[in-house]
Image 1 (cartoon, rainbow, N blue to C red):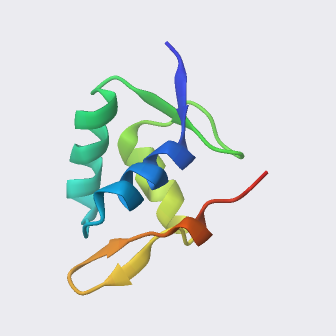
Image 2: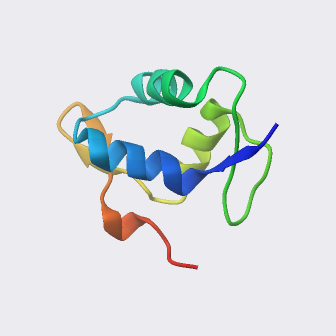
Image 3: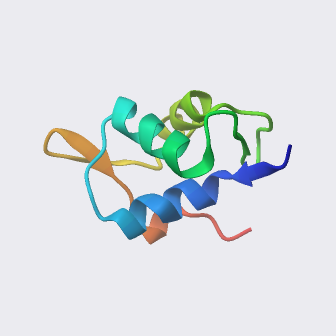
Length: 79
């Protein structure tokens, strides 16, 4: 099974232009990429959707807003 880079999830969030909760983001990721999809970042491999969301949150990739969070292009690293 191929691995999807976490940047693709951040790009999905930007394109959707909506607020997420942890639960709604996990659901959106699973709907877009599939229940069994695995993800990687520049630092981690083999992450589930839930693990990826936790990791991205710990790295400050989300921007709090009202009753949820979003992100923007500045949160995507360029390496």
